[in-house]
Amino acid sequence: MLLPPPETKLPGAPGKPADRFAGRTPQVPALRFAAIGIAVVLFGVLDLVMILLLPGRQRGVAALFSILGAAVILLTLPLLLSFFERQQEQIEQQSREIETLHAMDTAIASELELPRLLEVAVKNAVRAVDGEAAGVTLFHPGTGKLVAEEYSAVGQGVSGIERLRAITRTGRVSHEDLWEALVVPLSVGNDIARISDKRSETPFSGSIGGEPTGYLTAARRRPAAKAFTETDRMLLEALGGTVDVAVANVRALQAARDAVWMKDELAKERRVAQALTEGLLPDIPRQVGRLRFAKRYEAQGDEALVGGDIYDLFPLGAGRGGVVIADVSGKGLAAAKKTAMVKYSLRSYAREHASPGEVLARLNTALFDEPDLTGFVTLLYGVLDVHDVSFHYASAGHETPILRRSDGRYEFLEPTGLVLGAAPEQGYETHRYMLAPGDGLLLYTDGLTEARSATDGKLLEIEGVLRILEQNRQNSDATSVPDVLWASLNQYTGGRMRDDMALLWLECLLPSDGD
Image 1 (cartoon, rainbow, N blue to C red):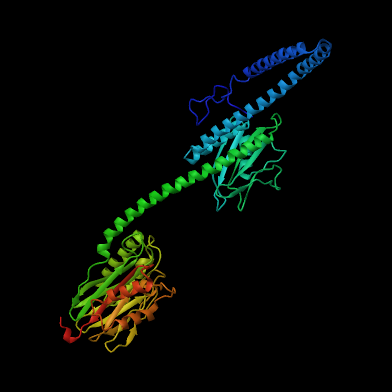
Image 2 (spheres, rainbow, N blue to C red):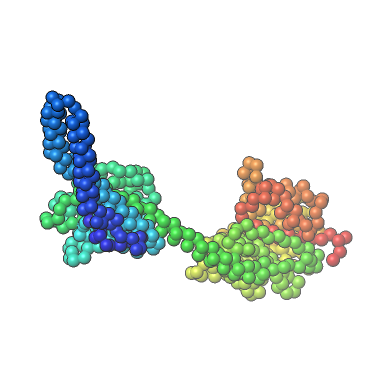
């Protein structure tokens, strides 16, 4: 066992001598001899008094037994003192070892950065077992890939270091190796148990429920090196347990730092996305000609105040207006950036092409050719003509709009092409519907139909939307339909919406409603 010199100061205990028992051993035997000598003298005086009190004929026999007893004491006293001294030295040796181990544990556990922690660990491994070299490796718990390693092998040459690295990375050493080595598996994140690995010639501790996540090695060069003892092995295992705990603490600290950083980044993202909200989700006019409009938007994610859903209503001139409802994959800032491109690119193409199908074809090509954008977009784009109250539309895989006729019948506007960005050179058909007075058209994203019941977990689906519309048909006007849907949806889900939702309702007014 390599112990610090009497005046060495151990890490983690500033100003404290490493050997608290220095100078104590020489004084203890002298004190013992003095105490025993005093006891013998007192015993002799007492024995002499007892002899003198005896009758004359018995004094000779008593004196003989006293002399024999004194002789036995004098003969056995050195043996007893030697035995007691060895016991005392063993106790002091164990005390020094415990003190040293405690100081090493403190030095390792006090490190908060992984590279420095591993450096301290290998230096203390060399010191603990009086070795010539040491190494430590750490592997990723999931993939098994090497993530960090450190070695202390001063003056051992390239071949010696390479062999030490091979032993420490694999945890295996043979009796023919140039190193006499102790190998202790590290089990950061695993349950540790002390077992003997039958696959190796060196017994060492292992892990139950998972492969070792690293190794701690201490080594001496053969053939001059003395063999490691069982005490050396136990001490290295104790240090390995300290390294396990210290590495887990470092990883937990790093995870906490990453969480704080991520929280700050999300806060920045929320602020940026909030700034984009005003442009992406504009106010829409309450009424244009004989058409009245209402909308509702609800974002459910914590990433930002805007998700990937969007609605838009913009003028095209000559009594025509563009209507958009879309769902862009993703959330937060990334979705907001893609949504901004979709919105403004569509507006640009809408002013160049009268056909909604041609607008979607151009937009699909733009999204497919954009390398920085990933994921797909479902979108419905239509053109409203206020003169004849017609609706021309093309749908790129979007949710089926619901057309409620004034007589209570329902019609569904089916998709006319694939989602945007899935494949190049896609074609989109344009369909045309006429709106009569009292007709209403509901455009929505999948947050509406995919809402789940708070009682049985069933999806609302289109049938549920139709049921809500029918139940509230007589109690709502054109401007309140989205709010009625939202209130019913909250009741259906128990207030636990999981996805963003955008609603856009347009209704052709009856002549009696006026402008």
